[in-house]
Amino acid sequence: MSVNELVEGIEARQVPALARAISMVENARDGYEALLSAIHARAGAAHRIGLTGPPGAGKSTLTERIIHAYRAEGHRVAVIAVDPTSPFTGGALLGDRIRMESVTLDPDVYIRSMATRGELGGTATTTREICDILDAFGFDRIIIETVGVGQSELSIAATADTVVLILVPESGDGVQALKAGVMEIADVYTINKADRPGADRLRQEIEVMLGIRRGNAYRHVAPHHHPTPAEGRKGGKAESGATGTDAWEPPVLATSALENQGIDELVHAIEDHATHLRTSGELESRRRARLARHTREVVDRTLRHLVWRDRDGEATLQNGLEAVAGGDVSPYELAQDILTGTQREDTNGR
Ligand SMILES: Nc1nc2c(ncn2[C@@H]2O[C@H](COP(=O)(O)OP(=O)(O)OP(=O)(O)O)[C@@H](O)[C@H]2O)c(=O)[nH]1
Ligand SMILES: [Mg+2]
Image (cartoon, rainbow, N blue to C red; front, side, top):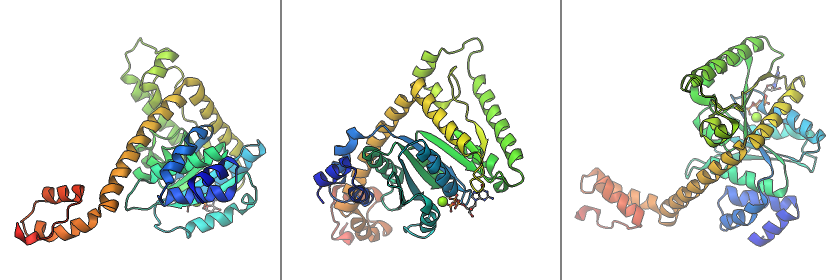
């Protein structure tokens, strides 16, 4: 299928074209950037929801519940399950597919798993691009499920408009996760497995923690100055949720995906946040920031591809390593060779 055929297929909402387009982007096959460029103008209507939390927190079970809730409202829902730990597709994700079977026969639900590949990096970038395709295809709610609360998972979650952090009573890492910088990124918290003991305590702990953070944030604001909504919108501070009269206060919810409890409240919180983003002008500024970041990342990725793939940088590195180890060539000279695509033939001659 040519790029044009894929674009037409996406416009005609043909699932095979969608699947092929996603594979093309995932594998950075020839023409993928032309494809993304062609569909770019069609994307932008979907609300993107990042769902993250420790392994086994119930993210997939919760996702399935959220899909049902959205379908009941007539939304078209796509899910990308990103597996940052496994270099292969399948495995745990196959498990997800089986669990998701109650929704996979619905043509307005699309579930795709994506394995992260270390080498040339950029999982967050690729995730964003796959979201663009799903968005252009006509899914209006896109859920991105990532495992873990580390930096790379958070950067993937940050590709979303609304980030939901899922914690569980027994994980005990609720407060830890907040310390690790999740606080800055989560828009909605939910304690899943609330059917188990300890959920209330964790919930309170997190609420207290969030309140303290907010209190700390206010210390840096001049005492008698209350920013108007317009100021809050224009200033960078409103983006962090710390200041501004219309700042978002992340709710801390409790759910039981297993017993189907608290799902409506969770979906409402996500939708409230979506409304908040739109009405406060933050959606616009977030998306602008995301476009800037994305463009930078595309430049970086192109450079990496140019140097390491097209100019065979790794071979140049391996060839020159002996000379560097022997002290004849400095790493900086070898780096220059890699950047310019120069093979160093007589490494002993210098
Ligand atoms: N008791 C209880 N168990 C739950 C709940 N939600 C999910 N589980 C169970 O927790 C286990 C893990 O659920 P998943 O939905 O696969 O969790 P996950 O976060 O997607 O897991 P990974 O993707 O492997 O990190 C399963 O056995 C679920 O049945 C819940 O609300 N209460
Ligand atoms: Mg899962």
